[in-house]
Length: 115
Length: 115
Image (tube, rainbow over all chains, first blue to last red; front, side):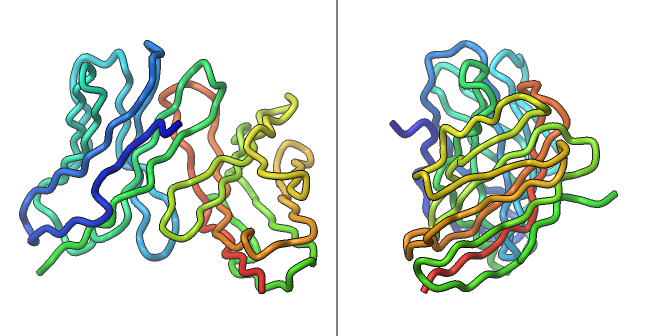
């Protein structure tokens, strides 16, 4: 069963604009963590931001913020003031305590920033 | 400091041959993960090691796949009798501990092509 769903295979955004990348997840566990990673064309996975299921506030890291809506089971990534270097694949991932230490990844969203 | 390194960066092999992929985690990281990423897909969990505990092999797709970790550091993923469907990028990641919020740090991957 798909645990992480990213419904946007590809997205385009104008430079300096904000963009939201969607992620929904499926779990009945109360404790879990949600991660976003960036994968440039070089291939390496880069950690961007983390949100814990018990966190009261949405996570923020510089230009990245996570719009966490627990009841809807969504954890959308918002990138503000897009830059050309933001063009990459973005993956949402979930980690649950009751499955040990497996990370479940979505299929990713390809973001292209247009100058 | 040095990040996670993987070798070789690219590997082309013939169907039926065995291959070995190597991962050097970040020094001091006790947890080590292997993933497979097929073209256009997310990351598929293969196996993880934590310290001296028995590895979680639940993600290995067949008995042709095996992995070991020597001395709690370097890991080798072995694929025997390779098939064309094994062609993918194999990513290794490590982390310091197994807390829910602890991210993984990824290596650059090994691109495997089975002809």
